[in-house]
Length: 205
Image (cartoon, rainbow, N blue to C red; front, top):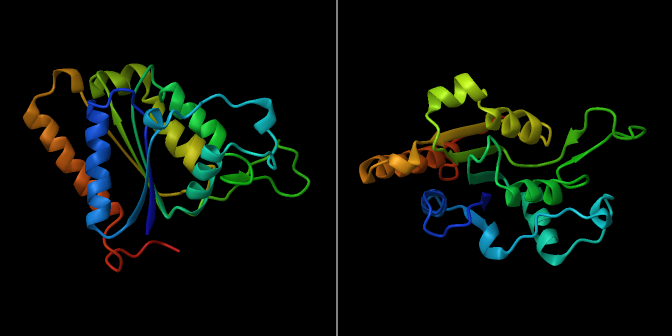
């Protein structure tokens, strides 16, 4: 399988980078092809311009590459911190510019955008790994865990990816080396379960 891995964190020494490294390593050990993108390292511009709004717009080479990969990926892994209950701006911009009409979804003939779109992504499953400095109990009871609905319902379900697994790790800022090692082991286990070696797992048709 070809898996697209998207990382959004500005600090190369962050735990998000360690998560992405563990995920990529496990995918490659299982024999998968990996398209890995560190959005900050690439200098990905999150700004969607008016020139890119139409589905047939000419796209800059980097955006076109992302679109081509995500359209054909058989699996997707997203890694980012929870900032204000949202992805970082660079990742929100990636969603705006890459999960675009004609790539990630389309509207049926005669629908001018007021209806429910048809998802186009071919990925059989997606994993979202988040980090947080808010305890899980407070995240769920006070904030309602907005990232869960965002990724599962607003983005992936709409784009045709029905199997979405999301894990939140925290509190990162006070975590010990032992805790972080345990979380990375959990990342590898999750990736191996969702994207095992070919021939081990049968995905639903």
